Structures are given as C-alpha cells and as structure tokens.
Length: 396
Image 1 (cartoon, rainbow, N blue to C red):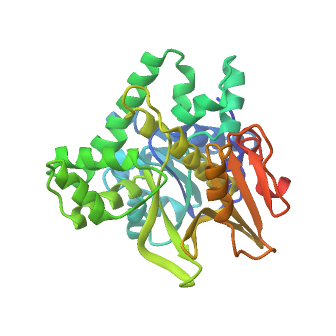
Image 2 (cartoon, rainbow, N blue to C red; image 1 turned 180 degrees about the vertical axis):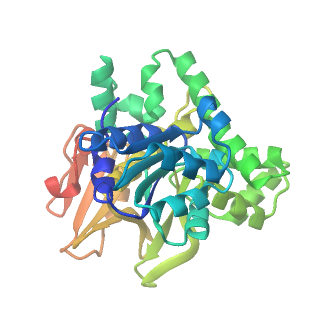
C-alpha cells in the first residue's frame, strides 16, 4: 500500500500533542492503513507504543470496557511519552472515557472509528474540544496511479471517472468482482451504517431517497423537490424527513453539501446547496445499462481533487449564472467551470459566459476532457488529464 504523505504530513505536526488525534472518513477509504503508517513512522524513534485493533476478536475478547483499555495500556507502556493507537475504538462502550483518561497520563492518543457509531457531531459532544479531526478521502487520481504502479496495473482516466478511488477496488480486475465489492460496500456505508445508527424505521423509503441523492451528484438540491419526486413515484416522505436523511449521509461522509454564494446578494444562499458524492462509484453502481453519468461524475471528481489540494470550495452565483466552483486558499481565488466537453459552440458559450462580469484579478479556469486547448486571454483551459496530475492550481 502506498504511503499517503499528503494526510500524514498534516497529522505529523500533532504526533507529540496531548490532543486526541481522530482519523475519520467514509468506510474503506484507508483510515486504518494511515494509522498503521503513522505507527510505523513513530516506531523508528521509539518502541513506547501500544496498538489495539478492535476489529480483532482476540483483542475484544480480552478488552471489553473502557477501563480495560486504560489498564492494558498502563500494563504495556513504558515510562515517558507513550503513543497509543486505537483502531475502530467505537466497538468499546464509553471509549471516549479511555481517550480522555489516557491523554492525561502522558499519552499521545490516535483513534479511528466507524461512522456507524462515531460521527463528527459526537466528537464535540464526547471529547469537548480535546481533539483534532483529520478527514481521509478515497484515493485521488495521483494516488491511484501510484498504487496501480505498485500493483503492476494501468488505470486510465475514464476508469477513474466511473469507478472512483476506493483503494481496495484497485486490486480487483474483473468488472463482476468489482461490482460485487462496491455493492457490498455501498450496502454497508449507505444502508447499514445509517439505518442502524439512527434506527430509521422507513428503511425502504430511506434507501430509495439515498439512491436518488447519490445519482444526483453535482446538482443543486431542494429537500422539497426531492420529496415531491419521491411522492410522484409513490413514496411518501416529508421534506423535513428528506433534509434529516441528507444530514445523516453528510455526517457519515457519504455526501458533501456545498454552499452557494450569491454575488448579487453578497451572502451565502440559505437552503440552496449542491451535493457531491465522496466517491463517484456510488453513482456508477446505480447506473442502468452501463449508462454512466460521466458529465456529473467529472465535476464531482474535480470537487474531490480540489478538496484534496486543500481549497475551500463554494458554488458561485454570478448574477444568475452559476460558476461550478469558487476555490479559495490563502490570498488566491479561482473561479472554475467544469464540462465534459466544449467542442460544440453551445457548450462553449454556456461555460465561458458564466465568467462574464468577474474582475480581472481572480483567475478563471475551464476544466474539460477535451484535447484541444480552449484558453483565451481571460480564461485558462486545463485539460482534465493535466489537472489530475497537479498538486495545486498555483503550479500553472
């Protein structure tokens, strides 16, 4: 497995901090692997390390309470600063009490947890600001290429547009095997985690709404419109219920809700957001007859890549013309339009006109899958295959 230095470099700054380090993200995005890589890195300088994996039955047969965790650590650790790694810690009831106790005993604590029991809102409630949270995402394309090289495989861009970046899927070559894995993962993270965690009674309705949302990536949503669409299909669910389910999916890092900013109103537009999937595979496994939604998946992938690069993302309403992304980092602002192709005149005019009226200071970027360079004096065109290899937008 590749070393995910982009994430580890950020976490490394907190190795010796008494803050609890929480590594989170959607299931099977690589949290446990990163935890092991951090442990291996720290092991170079010290052996004062205790590592517990609570998915291991041997571990949970011996450690069943939060007091057991503390007692085990105290028994195994050495004097001085100790590094404690608790993988899938949510399997132990009142795990947060162990974390809070250990940090007061000269321990640097690292944890991962499944989103079925350990969700972002609970970090604040249970740990009261005594933690730092690091979100891990599925592979971006640069990571895919690195791991594919390690596996002796080639993964073209169009494969990424369809099947995304869940790490394990790269080890599977046949489409049937790939679909079995992704469908099983989907059932776990979308249905089991959320349904069980929140004790959703209308399971069938939730599954259908979740499927609708994941097929509607890279689109502006309205809970009312979704509820109306479900009603027309014979599924009764109120708009506030839909909004609540979207919140659950967001809490489990399955969906991101991106705010829209209005130039005219000079404010964020309330109740007007765009949805992006954590990974486009969650759209593609729902495609009928291999009619993959490459257009919206491409925009979703650009969103995921920009997040990986560290940009703050919003959707920009330019006096009624929607600009897909306003990406901000430090003093840099980038207005970005994304399209599968602008080879046709209508598509070219539509995408370019969105930039009308913007100032000349901020950079304007068009990202497409075209091979021809459509750059103008005011707009930089970046080919998708080039964008996916960039570390940041400042490299151009």
